[in-house]
Image 1: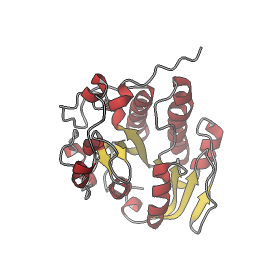
Image 2 (image 1 turned 90 degrees about the vertical axis):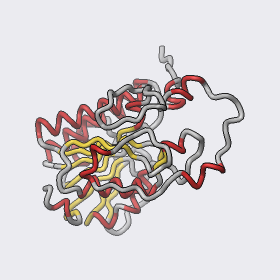
Image 3 (image 1 turned 45 degrees about the vertical axis):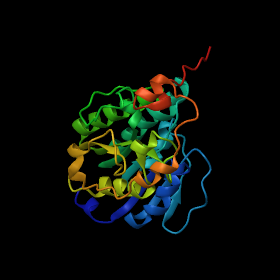
Image 4 (image 1 turned 120 degrees about the vertical axis):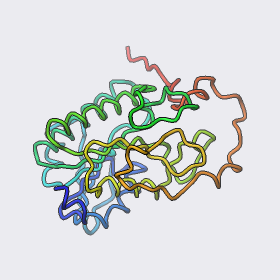
Length: 272
């Protein structure tokens, strides 16, 4: 399977979370890299176009996910909850959902997964630190915990079954930086697409952790241990430095101190 992924995918590429902000970007931009792009989400999706299949699916439904993965060559797993929420919600979409994706991959012989992890896996490191792939995981909330689980899950499926995964610790993927923190964490849409492309087509992937960040002037993350992907970001937050003002009021001390920003203070969510 690795050799076929050095060229255009010859079968189906599954994109989960295809109705989300990043999924919508990838839906358009991944089409040249697949004969058929299979799109899935629990949210409504626009009708399939040429070269697409639309398959609605709840990631918490194991049988449905198993059918979703069937006949796919590779998976770009963007699905799940992408913000801090009560644990019960995170559990179904992000933890059970990730398990179901990897079980489907195992059962149907999918050999490569691109997993949307998050910078919030390491959110309780201080902003003065520069982290590489071996930095201790310090999740900043339930969302970060779920992505840390996903990284362990993907490692297990690589060690046990040989399913290769790139865990993309995505920073802040937006059309442009929205605040001062994002001057360090920003990932442009063009660089996101290039990172996913590199993860899909790297001749040898293994189990790789890579930070999803553009070539910003000041970054908190070092991708030296993911150099085999060949990812070279082209964009930078530098042009936005002067247009993003300092906050009108002093930020929360912990949010200003730790890399996770406001995620380190969100919750807890009372459910009783």
